[in-house]
Image (cartoon, rainbow, N blue to C red):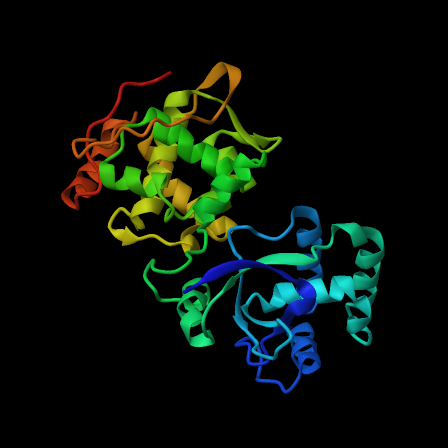
Length: 327
């Protein structure tokens, strides 16, 4: 049975058979191999531990060393243990490229270095392997830890006070447009390719052609909302469906100035013309997620755009109704 126990760093041993490195014969060899393999990443991890402490949702996994000295072998968390050893005893890094960094961290933050850790003790390395795999292995189809997508990272950035114009554009569309449920779920989820969207809308050529700018990280416009909403809805739909008309759409379609120009030349004629309004406004929104299977793709666009929307309707991705001009 797995148990939790607080253990002193001095009673924790590196796993000489740690999967990050070739099996070693001693603690020193294992530590040196981890230093050689990780390099400056260990310094970054050390600074993070000093600033925030150890992650309480990711405890070290250990097995009894059975050496009669109450020692435990760390089978998950060898980088963290290496860093703690170097912080407490920076001379262990002597002769490496990170020795100066750890000597300084020890001198400046000696009182902030954790000396005891909460660990999970498992009966054997084989018993712990199931949890190690769920953290590090790929191809588990959701059974293990899932890395953040670009969309997840963008939402986290905004939560921490950063600006993400691409997310503002998406939220503006979600707030003001009734989308087909499938497209809405893509925009509300984690799979939307926000990297492609930001590559496009952060380019000066696209901003000038569409009619907005980026000021202090926020999208602002002097153009009518009907035009901006129509264009952005079309763009995010193209990216979400990976289709532009009858053609496949990828980031390559907008990865150079010439390709962006071609793309916009094809897209913009289907939307309201430029019309300057009396005051500058910010492109953003706070979407309410009340979707149902009857949701439709709906935004302000001229009649010549109906053909493309109707074509998309046949695929089940996009409806063909259009909202009234929002001014």
